[in-house]
Image 1 (tube, rainbow, N blue to C red):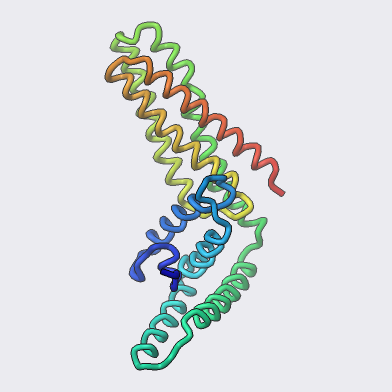
Image 2: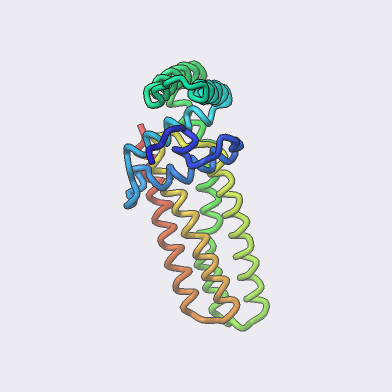
Length: 240
């Protein structure tokens, strides 16, 4: 079935809350954005997703869009012939023009990027460092005697702190949409957080069964996360 509304583009109901719209946009953008280099990357689909979010993500544009949808439904219910595709195209073009004008008046692309780097990238990068930096010393300390209650307790405290940093990092990451120019940076941070979350789960398994497999797997996931963090740093350095 062809996608006919911005709500369908984002797989949402017209009653969706602003938080649900933002969550849907992030989920779909991370799935289809070309910079993620995944099998699902789709430039055409991400263009539709971005256009939908530009309208639904702005309260004023969304209100106007909803009014147009309601008017179209009323005309069709009254028996009038409405070219839905053309009507939607004109509405989208007009709304996008208003959005671009408003956005240009508020801040330019450089200001958006600077804001995202200060409010998202920098604090998340610091949180990642709080997780990654102590791992080697924590594992070395525990390896002296994994069955020592004090050493195991210290390791478990470290893992709990890691989970808190992960939760805070994920919330910070979701607090502000990344500008298009920072898509590669954002993708690396996103995957880094996921790898660390999985790694912490593996390390927690070790505290339950003392199986070295979980230590090795957890360290490997942390190693991948560290590489992704370095890739994010490198991507920031390449920003214009």
